[in-house]
Image (spheres, rainbow, N blue to C red):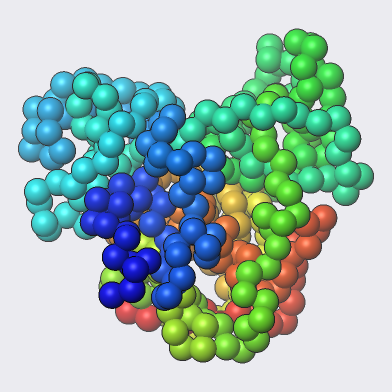
Amino acid sequence: MNADKAAFSRRDFLKLSGLGLLGLFVPNMPLRAAGFPLNLFFEDAFDSQQGRITSRLIWLYDKPSFNGNRVKMYWRDSVLSITSATVSEDVSDYNRIWYEIGNEGFAYSGTMQPVRTLLVVPVNNISATGALGEVSVPFTDAHERADAGAPVAYRMYYETVHWVMSAAAGSDGKIWYQVLDDKWNKLYYAPGEHIRLLPDDELAPLSTEIPDADKKIQVRLNDQLLFAYENDSPVFVTRTATGAVLRSGTYTTPTGLFMTYHKRPTRHMAAGDITASGYDLPGVPWVMYITESGISLHGTYWHNDFGHPKSHGCVNLSPSAAKWLFRWTSPVVKPNEQFAYKTKGTLVEIVN
C-alpha cells in the first residue's frame, strides 16, 4: 500500500462518504490532487458543516439506527449543524451512514443534503453572455423582482447551478442577480451574496492528455456504482442512485452502450421532461445526456441516498461527483455556452 492510501484512514473514509464527498480514487496520487472536493473551503471536514432536510420530515434518534428511540422531529428545508458522521450497526443496510446533530441525536444521511452557508461578495459586471453561478447557501428563493417581498417563483438549493444574466440593485440596496430559468426562458432575481460565480478554471476540462477514445464510464446497476476509466485503469469511483420501480411506474435505467453526446452545466427539469415525471427541479447541475429521451447522468440535490435505485431513469450523482465527470467527459462545454451537442461523446457502458 502506498503512502497516500495509507494516510487515508478508515475514519476519513467514514467521514467523507457520510458527507457525500467520497467520489474520487486515483492510484498513486494524493486524492486532493485529482480534484478531491474535501477542503475546498475548510481544513476540517466538519467545520461549519450543515445538513438540509430533503424529505417532508425526519426524526432524530438516540442512536444511529431506525430501531432507536425518536427524540425530535424536523421538517423539510430545516438546516441543522452536523458535528460528525458514524456508521449504523445494521450491515444489511445499503446506506449505513448517519449524521450526529450535536447533542440532539442522530439523523439518517439519506434524507439530509450536506450544505454550508457561504456568503459571497457579489459583483456588478456580468458578461453579456451570462455567467454560471452555484448556490452557496442551503437555499435561496428566486423572486419575480429584486425584492425579498416579491412573489417567489421557485426555491434554489445548495450546489444547484444557474445562469446569471445580469446584476441589479435590490430594494434592500444590495446586489441581486438576474437568473435564467432555462426551461421556460424566464428571468428571476436572487440575492447576489447567495450565488458564487464559477471561475473558468473551475470549469476547465480534466485529463485532456488522455484521448477521448481511451476514456470510459461504467455504471454497475447491481452495485449502484459508477467507475471512470483511463486506458482501462479506474481513476474515479462514486456511488449512484439509478432508475427504480416506483409507485408511479417503472423507470429502470437502460443497459447498453451510450455516449455523453449532449451536455449542459445546468437544466431545469420539469413537467414535459420524460425523466421529471411531475417533479419541478430547477438548476439540476452538470447534466450529461446519453439518450434522446432524456436519460442522463447528473448532480442531485433532492436526496442524499446513494447506493440504491430511486430515480426516474437517470443516474443520480452527488453534485461534486457529477461536476468532476462533466469536466472529464466530452464534448467540452465552454464557460460562455449553455450546452454542447455533438454526434459523439465519452463512452458510457451501463451493465447489471
